[in-house]
Amino acid sequence: MTAMTPSTALVTFQPAFTDPERLALAGYLAGYRGLTREAYALDLRQFTTWSAAKAGGAASKGRNERRAESDHSWKVMTRL
Image 1 (tube, rainbow, N blue to C red):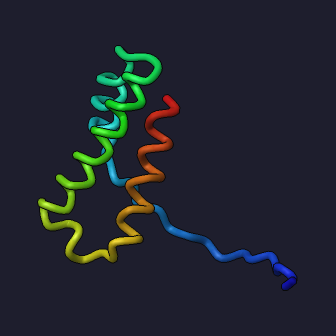
Image 2 (cartoon, rainbow, N blue to C red):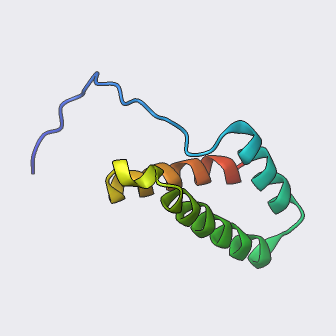
């Protein structure tokens, strides 16, 4: 077992969605509940990830980094 040392390193975060995009996606999901909402949330997450990759923004980032940003933004957005 290794000991963990505290770190004061800061990680910069650039959201994957703008505020208007987050508002639009949250507004769309607000009309649904339960499994339907979860299914639509998954569909939207996959579509927005695909759309960002198609737009060329994904070419400059690693796949794991891009996925982590998308997942984090999505988790924050769907808690609204």
